[in-house]
Length: 523
Image (cartoon, rainbow, N blue to C red; front, top):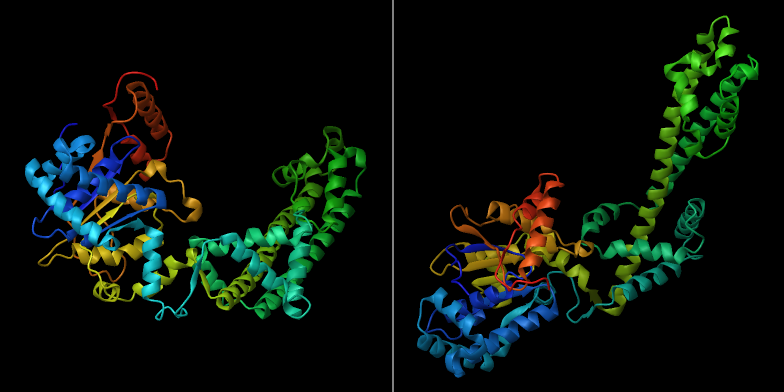
């Protein structure tokens, strides 16, 4: 393996497609950081490496320990020879010196295994929540509940237990059920409530739910009544217009009307309650631009003024089009108004369940810690944690959510703020592999870092300018796949980029070409 491109700046952003040797590079950088100072075998305790899954975290920790053992015990480093050479290149040390440092660090790790900071983002956030439990208003002792569906089902049961006892809630749920039946969503309320409840566990719903928390059932009742009255007013207006159109059409022989049956059908639908049926069809709409289109060719010849009747009807048609649009909007507002009100009550029911059972769901941790840390300096965070991490490795960055990024910021602030002991951060990801948007991942955060090779600090950040102190290093070699596979992928990504709007994703695919380092063949 050729020499690695060496990091030159405190903040390094690596973009690494599949097969690019990302895991190898992460292990090399972690070990090099841990071994950099020969007089500090416990330096690993200042390193925090975060990835997305428990499996990935376990594999990273295992690889680090196995490699250090090979460096210190195995002649010529055994299976870890390639990694040993990479660490030597990074540190510019001999094999003998590497073995000495590795032996000391491995011994220190085994004696203080709990200080090895390799884990998942969720685990770290959980640790923060435990640390700040008092400030967050949480009980001193609480359990973490990982079963999201179970908690949401309990919230629904809590909500339904009040039916018949809480008159306003009962009326709200009855109204919501009727709306579902009208929309042909079925009469079984439970599946609809469970689908709705899933929004409670989505990071993207947090701000909307906070706004909705001010929306009481009294607000719902007043708004619902006003919308109902307006909807009735629109029906009356459309009904009168339908009568006027019918009277106008009765002034001429039906045989003179072009597509008379379509006109009759339209008028009959106007007398119904469904606003979707009020929208003028193509035949009716044509009269608005060409009044004579009301008549057949022979019918127009029999009229003294074929434009006059068509123009009169066109005025009603335009009004009906406007009223239909308003009625459809009101229908959607009423439907979503019910849903929003039910959502608010379900959120309250969930909070009662959590308090009663003294549990906290994992999905709430990011928001809880973010609310606390946004007003606190980085020094406060480190003082409470009792640790002082100086070096950070963030893997699978494309699957990190916006809120998680904001929670990581205080750590990066402290590490990159300079001073006598400046730290570092290595962020690794692949925007093409973001598959967790359903749980809040925001690949755009990582893609922006790749393009700008800098982080945009949130409001009130104490982080100084990173101009000239950041770098983007693409890992463009592919060590896993055969040449034919790499060539096919390169052509595919190039074709995909040509079909995309010129945004961050376009630039990602445009720069996705790899150089094959594997054997020829198609497997």
